[in-house]
Image (cartoon, rainbow over all chains, first blue to last red; front, side, top):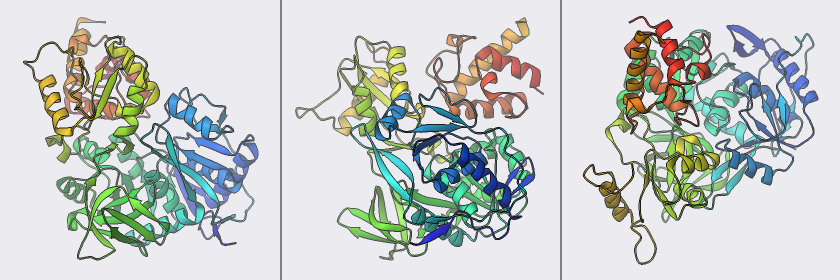
Length: 454
Length: 89
């Protein structure tokens, strides 16, 4: 059996995390993991809702050493929690604050754990052990599980650290939730697998982010998104120096990358990955458009599909993006956007098929369709554009329909605007051709049009 | 609420509608309605956007540790009261 260690820190005094500018040692981390493992209720499946990155890491590690599987759905709406219960009837959730109305048995993360004096051995974990299930939105309204094995995740974040030059001594601050692949890999597993440390708190406002970054020793690394970068640079006159910036979840405009590199005095790399493969490539945005795969990862074109394989990608996996290899080199590529069906808002991903399924499953909705917003000026500045929905539901009020949608889909995908219409422009085959729908939408949104409630 | 704060409240309502491109009139925001989640339906992305507009207009930065986010953004009224207390311009 091949195994890989839970963390790679070389001595018990090595620093794993920072809280309020105070270090947390590997000794204390392993003790906290032991403590939480001993308190966990029965049940093999866990929804880890801890907002604090250190508590998330301890909880994740406690689940790993006790053979539990962390479920990582893309959202925690009541409908998604019902789906998780269906997939794993024994699921319970672990929270470090109010569980936000999640309808599951709740295990509360202990407020205090004992200070540890004893040294513990770092557990070795079977590379084949499934430690997490990540879900993508199927087009049928049912989330599709992807099994994440320990060995593959560890190889992926070690390859990332190697490519980016992240080594022991780096302190990492993440502004993204650990419950998604990017946050899990770059803010948690990469520090734990490179002998580095992580900032325990996850800051929200730009001023919080600056303070949390300034509290870390150097070299320090900020793991963030185009959206956070934009608000951070717009609001703060002075930002703390960093040594490395990472961005993912949405394309980063080059001018924003240039400004971020100048003001943080650090190189900025974008990370490319998807739920199915995890992170597999990076690029320095200010140095060109081409992406470089992590060591041993190769891309292969086959008809319309590009496959990733090698290194941490244990089985050839089709990528759902429009990708072009540079000079037929299997390690360098250009990204031409996602397939039209896929939706990505502020790093949350779903498909139009999934959203349309749920819209049309609401009682009282006779017909309805979600549309992607058109590319607008605010795209270049990192602004967030919301989805549009056209719906035929003469018996429903907008408030009733929004409430029903809120129960089923993540708030970031709620339509803005939600437009009530008499009928959708379906063709003879019952399909909604994109150009016809767009033309129809333009008519509905035209200020001279009357007869449509707004 | 004082007259000055009522005026501020209207300004904050305009700021929210402007920052988020909302398709409603500022006066349609009920002072006591929940801004977050159900009610006005704002989410964390909107909250950050409003926070940015607030810092530009009123000269102070919202922080997580000096007040409870959820309480500040509970309603138009609570946000107005927080701004009235913290503003520098």
